[in-house]
Length: 124
Image (cartoon, rainbow, N blue to C red):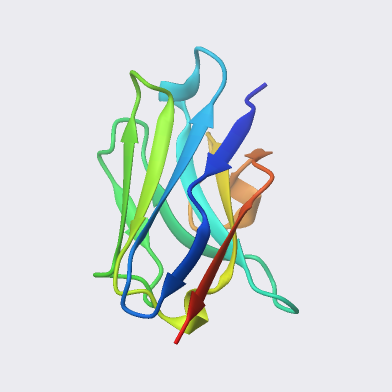
């Protein structure tokens, strides 16, 4: 069982930055791939970024490539998402997720554990 708690959401002006953090409970954190997803009002929850157990692989969705950076600190049981050059279309609730044993960590089905989400609102 893994419990995830996100923090760092808030308001940002277009072009600005925010940093999201997610702290996980449990000793098995290093064995999990971690991901960030987001869900805007009236839309499906979508993949944003994911990172492997030791950070050996990283995936981004095209719309955030070059603007967002995912990282993890296994000593602190933490995964972060640095979001730069924010756009109004980045507005959503952002969720942290943990999973293992899947073939593709770009899909919701790969992740068994989810945080409660943190709101990110970008205004122009």
